[in-house]
Length: 277
Image (cartoon, one colour):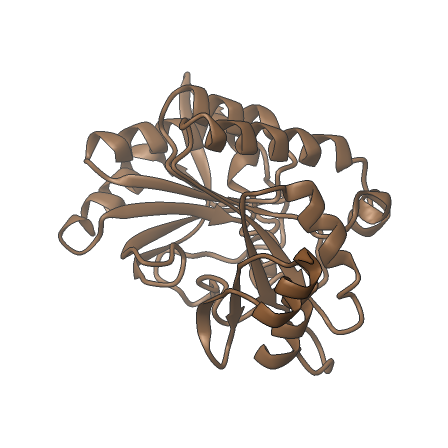
């Protein structure tokens, strides 16, 4: 999914009352084929969004199902359940937004979990002249490889949730190697010009700021987003507190909060200068 999107500014939150979104408690998270055709396990559709791809007006298609169960997921209502849709119907939804958008974002749930459906929808979107973005937790690197090698993705937001030593325990599964593959794949594609936009998203909660430097070290020189995490009764970090965390990285980052939206933060210049000396 837009894995771990938990701030109000992180991306569109799907409600069970959203147009074309159906909630169910039944499980149905795999690619569904009938008579050779691919069907999408559909989570919802937003015809116009300005927060799912910063600087671009897009529509957003939400895929139902995700193998990861983050306690703070803002779209928990579509992590399971079944709503099978013909791809042509979804393509028509995207086409209906063409006058107002320049791109489409595939989110969830986890869109890369439904590889065949995602690849076909990305191809159809590119044929319409749209840019294609994907929000992912990175647990299906093979899907990302297919999108990148096929030249049908322009933007990937990869949510990295913790330092590698904590990953499998936090996600309650053996996911770390797949996420590492996704990071390496996207980072290499970005460096060689095969992926126009790539960012690593770190969702921050109070008391877990020590994770940031480790994740940033793995990310290397790619864009980093520090995203305000919102969960339960825990008071979210303020923009000022997030800036102090960003200062420890000695590099520019994007900071997303409910209060201030997204800003590009260059860091405490005096601290950066002293570190250079």
